[in-house]
Image (tube, rainbow, N blue to C red; front, top):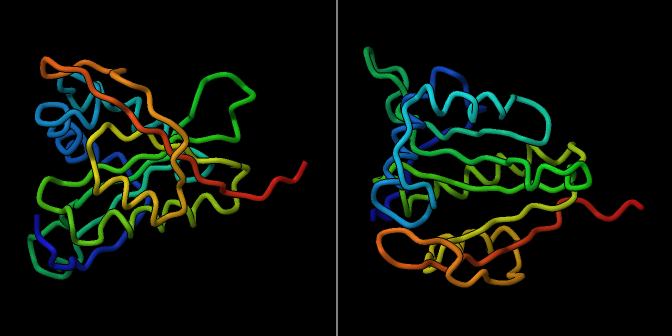
Length: 184
C-alpha cells in the first residue's frame, strides 16, 4: 500500500462509471471478506444498484478520479474508488438513517482517497433529511476503523461471526455518526 498522496477530484457517480465500479467491487468480492457477497457481478447486474444512487437525495454515489491524467490526450480519468450512502433498512421509520461505505481501487489505499470521498459524501448529505449514518466493518480492518473514527463515527457493537466466507466466520463491527442535531 502506497503512502504517496494522489491528486484526485470527487464527483457524483454516473452510468458511464458502471463497468469500472463493478470491477472495483468484484475485487473485494473475490479477494476479501470486506463484502459478504460471494459471487462476482456483471455490470448489468449492478445497474440497479447504481441507479438507486441519484445525484440528489439521501442515497448518493460519489466517485474519486485521478486528476494526474487530466488534459493528457487519450487518457480518461482513472477511477480510484467510490463512496455511497444507501438505505439503512427498508421500513419507512428508518428513512432518516443511511448506511455508508467506501470501496477503493486495489492500488489506491493509503493515499487519502477515502478521506476525500467521505468528506464529499458528508458535505452532499448536509442539506438532506438524514439524522444518522451507520457503517458495518468486517473485522479485522484497522484502516477502515481509523477512517470512520476520524470522521466522528463511534463504535456501537459487534455482530459476532455473522458472515461466512472463505471457509470461516467473520465479525462485523458497527459504527454510527450523528449527521444532524435532533430537531424533534
